[in-house]
Amino acid sequence: MEENKKEQIEFIKKSFELKHLKRYKEAIEMLYKAMEFDNSPQDNVELLSQIGDLHLLLNNYDRALDEFQRALSLNKHHIYSIQKCYEIYSATNQYQKALKTASNMCEENKTPQSYYNYINALIKLNKLQDALEVFNSLDDTIKLDSDILYLISTITNDKKELILEKIISIDQSHTKANLDLAKIELEKGNLEKVIRYCLNIEDDNPVAFFYLAQVESKRQNYIKAIDLYTRAIKIDNDEHDFYFDLAKAYIDVFWFDEALMALKQSVNYSILKQDNKKRDEKYFLISWILIKQNKDSKALLNLNTIDKNSDYYKKAQILIQLVNLKHSKLSDVVINLEKYLQTEEKNPILIDTLASAYKELKLYKKAIKTYKTGLAYYPDSIYYLLEIIDLLIDEKDYKEAKSLIDDLLARFKNCASVYNSLARIYYRLKDNNKALDAINEYLSLDNNNAEAYYFKGLILNDLSDYESARNNIYSAIKLNPTVAKYYSQMARSYAGLKEYESALLYSKEAIEINPDEINYKKQAYDISLLIGDESKIKTYLAQLKRSEKVLKFKR
Image (cartoon, rainbow, N blue to C red; front, side, top):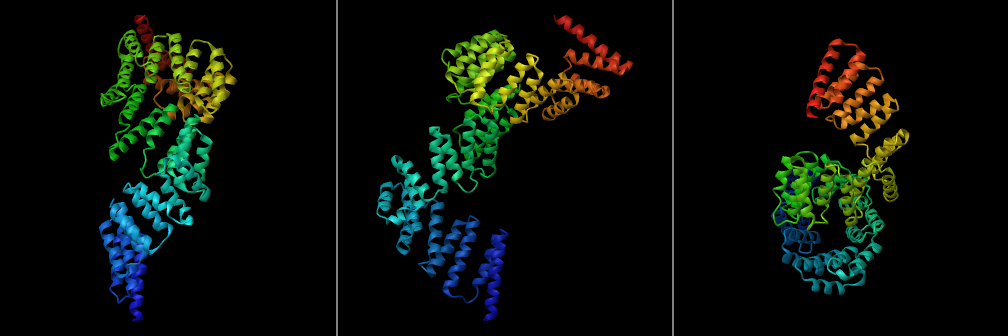
């Protein structure tokens, strides 16, 4: 008899080990072997409930239910098995059976958990008044159970906030109550309260990270927002579409490649979940980015998927005009866009597209006026403001540009792009040290921008700090190896260091990327003169003369 008991214990022990290794089917076999011994009814009840748990881990709800019901046939008062039956009925949307089971639990065991189950089942069956009546009939001690109170908060809109705050006073770290309050305060714009409620939650929670990211986006701290969206995604297990908001944060900092990847993930999520609510908006944003990346044919394919009855259809037609900017007569495109303006004057994409058209035509004052109109409709738009600042710089109106920058920095000191504009002003005014300070500030906020590293390298070359210039331009090339001017500027750094062979290699690379740029050929010719290699001098002189002839012919 003693031997049998030891052998049975070994089977049970082995089952726990296999369960820990997630080998659930083998663990079930071990428990069935343990049941072959002459057990007391109560022992069999416990073994059957353990087998039921293992079937639940395998998502075998029917088998799990059978095992828990077998346990209840031996002991109808076994609370654990009753609870598990309730959970299975709820998970499989059998709410009438869940209600009956919860009612039995309340008769057997008048605990907060039992009444929670009962009220929850009533809510699922849309018997809201019954649920409130049950709640009002409870003892005060059970009424103050935070989870029961949370259930009540979901069906009483007029008292929702009061109940949620009551829950927090009882259990400060209550996850659902904190998240609901954070959402309410986010909609009100009370950002500090959103942060407080999210930080109340003790465990890492993806929705809390999402709300914190929303706060940082509203504060224009996009880099921090991106980090928080990414953290939310890592721990979310694809329950929410955080990719869409992540994409919009990437767009705000002009990281278009990353935004495109996030949008594609968001589209995949929509397909998987059969959720088409924001489908057209996603395809619209994908198209907008593709146009910015000069991938017009791909953009048009996405634009053509947008439903004609969608709110984004008219916006899509405007984007098509943006494509036409590159392939049609600009004045005709402007006429079409100005027609749209009569009915779509508040459309942000139209404003941007029309201003871009004016910019292409070098009508800077009209472009500025258009962006200012957009700013009147969308006063919080940093994008419009930055475009106005850069156009003012192009117009050499540095005073007004600097004034707008100062206003912007007073509100959003962490907006990286402002420092790039500031650097451009100082560089135009030949104050290279101040320009360098501004671009360093930019890179402290966004160290993944190739153009910023290039600009810093350009300034350092002007200051004859060729070694530092080379290091920064190398960072630009690593981030984006397809831009000819980066290689030309690197050639300048090497020439300054008197490493002429390396300089010529980079200059040659610039020519290969952009063979139409005459200045790159002139640079290669000048460097070959410094090397003194006659064959190279002849090669680049011939290229330079051919380009000069072509240029003269075009004039």
